[in-house]
Length: 218
Image (cartoon, one colour):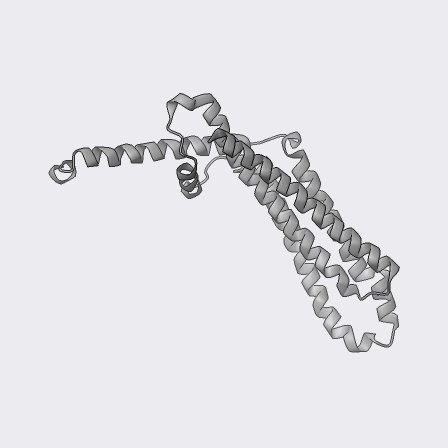
């Protein structure tokens, strides 16, 4: 079980790298195409959506990695003290309210924070090109502007909403990883509580099965 969880951690990290690489590559291709061709400003909206989704998925996988790392650390230090049931404990962990917080250094999450920052910067660039870039300047100066102005105005609200959602959700995830419920210490404390509660429930069920009349006589 230890090896399978460890391999899952490596797979999650590889997925983070692939998501980042795909998002940057597609965004760069669109930016290069827009620089070499006469394109509509709308072409900059898909990279904004893509980078936002990639950021959220990368940060979400970072929290999953934290959960798995916390579990493995407990296994390493308390292997003989508990019965280890990963899937069962994970389902219990998700139902356990998070009441722990902690603080972790930047170095522990250096890769994730750097990647998310790069994607935010790319989205900022795409937004600037959408609002003030050569493509929109040429469109405003053309005869077509009067026919597309209303549509472009609606698109502006969409882009503003996307970048706000991207920024806020990224900040929330960052804070949870570095100062909140997904720091290493907070995750380990939550795992300890989860496993102890699970073992207490199992013991209660076992006692009731061995003495089914205890509840009735009690």
